[in-house]
Image (cartoon, rainbow, N blue to C red):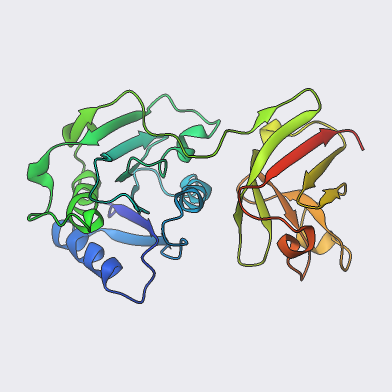
Length: 263
């Protein structure tokens, strides 16, 4: 039997004990689990960044994987602990928008479910009001990874809190979206999926620049040239080869991105 996969994403970093504590709880309950780290370097408290990194990895996780997602500046407040299932994978985390971006994927979502994690008998006790990642999300992830259906760990809910950034959408001229992430290379990642891009030629306006050349991969960019491409996650990206596009175009996360049809 294939060991269950539990993936983790957080803003805890690896300097402190938090990630090890969560893994310890998981392995105590599911000792055969394979633990996969998506990242623990989300900017502290940055729910939008965490949501993007989770969504970008989601389709590459194996079917049946369970994700523990913890970017939770509201821990200890009235925000709900939730679980979701969509496209054969599950995730548990705070209901603060962190899990909502994966539900925007245009793929098949007929298996979508969402619950509030209400079965307290499955939690680790006593529950710390400042560490739900260890005491709620990790033990629930272990239970799910062992085969318990999502509906047995909580009560069904009709909707989860949306991410605090508007969805990209079509306009008369093209598409309006946002810069949702800047990766370590300075590439500017947008929330505009390739399915929304105009057919044929188009330009992309962001920061102080308008980008008109589209390439398939980074090395196709000339020296000192800003280009656009569809990245490996299927989203529009502004990039340079060997330089930081974000610095060149004078943009930052959250800024608007305007796609206009035509050259």
